[in-house]
Image (cartoon, rainbow, N blue to C red; front, top):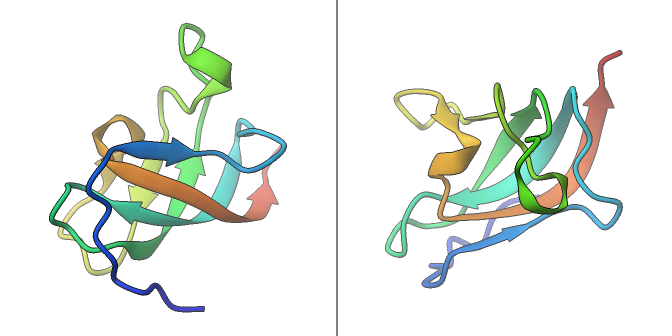
Length: 90
């Protein structure tokens, strides 16, 4: 599966149908700005935020992609869409 490199002009965070799970890795589509193309990445959810609406990823939730020069935090994403749950670590 490869992304279509579309631009997501409006911010949006689309969780999986069953909602995010703590200590779980996901394959996601992600963009970091309205003029940044959508890329496939890995989202590692550490904990769900206590004060976040609908159990959104909180502390220790990071986006990994080998084309980025660093690891990004979930809070920094402009657009993210869960594609597939990969693994949950107990």
